[in-house]
Length: 520
Image (cartoon, rainbow, N blue to C red):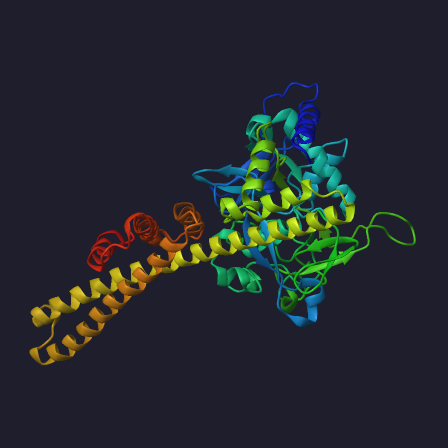
């Protein structure tokens, strides 16, 4: 889309969303909290609904750099060959529309599956009772089209009645839609709140056993019955019933997996998460995805199943302000020319060849070559940034390990100096000296390994170490690992110093680590 056309899209969208009605103050919910947020958390975003209802949302962070085209890679799917044609591992990229700068980019996902009372409040002319047993259950037997209609109605209600409460991207307020498959699975796995190993696991961490977190088929769990929202424990992002209870419609059509990429054939609808009636405990997994025909073949009616409901997200237009189109264009052009020398820029050479070429077939070939070069440049930059983040975290862990080992060495030295202080004897001192020597060797080896990583980071001239360190910090905050915040900042400082004036001496690195890597 051209910049000019993008601006017209923005103007038309603004006119559509603004409408002719003046936004009114948001009505306060009159439903009891048990009807829409039975397990409240301080960070919940509560938005009003018609009929005195409300819906709870959770912030889903997608930490990444601060460039306008930066996004977050994630490996989704499963390595199981039996389901590979549907769920095989694939690398995707996503980023939330909100936040940026010191605040991690993020989107919002409904904390619970949409309930029968919530959907009825959006779709029926008469207000439902807000706190009945049936009203607190997920709204199943809901077609994909009806879920889309409910999202559209909720967007309109919020823009008319609670615009000030909506997150914004630039000047654009959020709207409601179904989640994409990527958003759904990223959130189901725990997003940035879990480490890479837990993110890649079959399910999100369930330390108290699967029965505490999911309703599945069988007498030990659902026993064939749909359950009210919020009765099980949440996943690490505070989301309930992502696996089991009701399956959930997502936004886009079903596609097969062709060894790590989407197949070209777009099919029916997709439901994610499994359900209380057809999914056993052994079948529960974050990668589970099932295709359904959108219509019943015999009747032509939309597909409605007693096992499938929905869950909403808050999204925003990509171009949230008039300046965004220009920013995106400039960032795109900069990425296609990254790492090229001024006199030997392949993109510039291709542009020159296009200007001198009149043959349509040759122009098309040059366009394909240019696109391939741009993709390779982007992929190379993405790989370099991911490698830098891994190196930053590894160096931070090393620095923290050196600090801890040095503290152990100090304790051993105190024991050697005064064995009686720990109830020891002089006969134990030689053994303690041997242990002290091993720990001191560990400290010095850790400092040398740390220095090697700092040197590698300093040599990665095309990577903004400070920016990537901030992404690592955002990940660690999401994972609640505060003890690595200081070491990560130290790594960034040392790498930037090494880039500007050479690697600091080992003694300086050691002193800095012992002073700044305490984790406090």
